[in-house]
Amino acid sequence: MINQNSIPLNLTFEPANKEHVQEVLNLFRHTSAQLKKKGLTQWSYWSNPPEEKIKWVRDGFEKGEFHFVYNETMEWVGIFRLLETDTLYWDHKGLEENVRYVHSLVVKPGNSGKGIGAQVLNQLASDLEKQGVQKLRLDCDASNSRLASYYEQQGFVKVGEKKTPFSVNNLYERILYLGPMKESNKSYTAKELSELLGGQLIGDSSHVIIGPEQIEMAGSNHITFIGNQKYVPLWQTSKASVAVIDNNLDIQEPGENRAFIKVSNADLAMAELLELFRPDHVELEPGIHPMAFVHESSKIGQNVTIGPNAYIGKGASIGDNTIIFPNVNVLDDVVIGAHCQIRSGSVISERCTLGDHCLIQSNVSIGSDGFGYRPSPDGRGIVKIVHIGNVVIGNHVEIGSSTCIDRGKFSSTVIGDGTKIDNLVQIGHNCKIGRSCMIAGCCGISGSVTLGDGVIMAGQVAVKDHVTIGNGVTVGGKSGIINDIPDGQTILGFPAVPAKETLKQWAILKRMVRGKA
Image 1: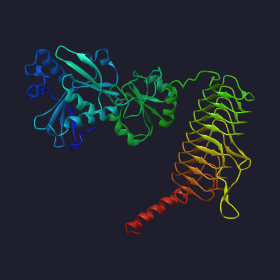
Image 2 (image 1 turned 90 degrees about the horizontal axis):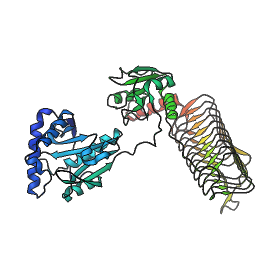
Image 3 (image 1 turned 90 degrees about the vertical axis):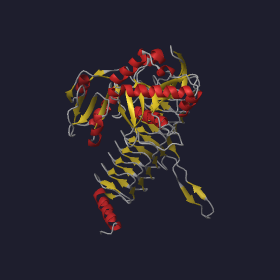
Image 4 (image 1 turned 180 degrees about the horizontal axis):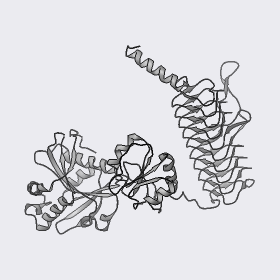
């Protein structure tokens, strides 16, 4: 939290030049004198620093740990030291990975009261978070309650206390980045990963990689991905040791002690590596939890897991090796195939069926009533139309969180084998979705729509009822489909027409607005 009374500054951090050691020691002496006037003994040793303190400063300059702070006119306004380890104040905790330690943050005379210190801490925290650093730590004299309050305003929390030969210090910590899910214990060399991916290795093959990470946040033990030319400049500042790159990218050599793995498709290579490093799945207690309700007439296969507070209705059937998470409702006469996973909060309504190897994410509704209503004959109300069909889902289907698939008015709403549906998608009654379709988030598909095989639908697409979309059609985001679409087309816009035509329309409109038509 930056001081609200200060004016935001464009601060720059640069490594301090060792030629300025004496100037920095003079600054520390001045700060010590100012603190003494306020009755604070913190930094009193800097008035006449012992040799070990002078050596501490010189060592910091030699290691590049001291950084000058410059304002927007490149005037030197402050200094701080940033350490990767700190056993003096933090003991064994000072050796933790992905933690940085701030010391000796001082603002030069004439710059106090401008909020520079707060902005340094916040900008530093932001920069470190982008690098995947998880915690920023510092300390202050236990007697300096004002400074302690100041640090707390910047998001630091007291986590301990440390006695040193010079003072008693409070230890403060600010959480920056909690990191990814628990990493697997797997590790591979760059050479091994290149062989697994069938790629071409360029550069140092000996790096040991513990996991993948996005290019801005990767550390030296991570592998990252560059699948687009716009990400190439980020490689220069990334800390990643290895990158998987597309063959067709214009990029120089990886650099000293770094490596590239060239592949024909970085996105697919990324998918392989994510699978390789995937952490262990959530583990539920095997078998049927005593707090689950399973109707006596239901049929439960071999090695099925059913979590607490799950409900399995009358006549339901669950195939071998399927996992039902806590708080799932499987209603009467539902059939679920083998090797499925149904996550918490989902409801599979009566008489619906799922094939094998399906993944249903949290809070999915399968088989709710379709939106069927008509005005009453007297015009004074609305008549609900009963839906007596069901939903039939094929094999290897994945359905994202909070998606709703309505049951058929008659017969079935059908989702074909291998189709992947994102979060927050609405599929109306009696739709027929083909095989291996991909439907992105927030799409709305009205009742009785037919999608052929291999349809790709970007986010927020709306489809009118009773429309047929052919095989292999690609639909651009936010398009509105009101007519049938032949096989193989790429369409865009509202109403959706072939994408090239839509782009021409947009170009003409832009010229008209500018008065150049």
